[in-house]
Length: 100
Length: 100
Figure: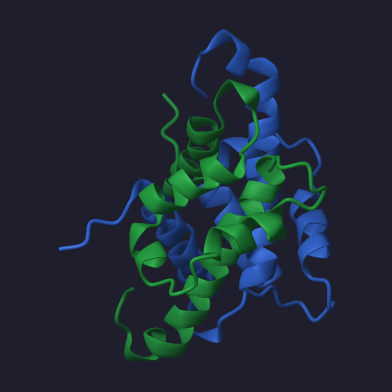
């Protein structure tokens, strides 16, 4: 029996999270992104002072301006958030050896 | 107490995986990528007929040709692998409702 690695599990979580919010239509609308951000990134959203945070995220992701964000667009959001977390971790935590 | 979501956990796994293989130096060499691919993507690597798979991955990631892959380069590898998995899932599995 093949046991997936932690990385493979993490990739699967990210993959199915898209399908959870995109549903059968296969893409995310601004409303889908709003619901997802509130649910999956609750603390992050709580700290956003700008009420237009989701609008700005949507503008970033929806390159074709058709109101639809596909898997690649969604993954660039996950990338942006993870890279920001890593930058914070490297600047504020890594030298002291404390985990995130 | 703040309980991280599954997505936040997945992002943390991906983040710490980089630091596990990059170590104090903060970047991945070709050797680091070889060790990581063999360990974290064992099945994927087993299915690669091309002995130069890691060389090609390194060439893709190491845009500055200095033999060093930073976190963003690493994340583009994770993105490529996840997008490929999603394409496979959408084509071969999603319609029948079976999970990956």
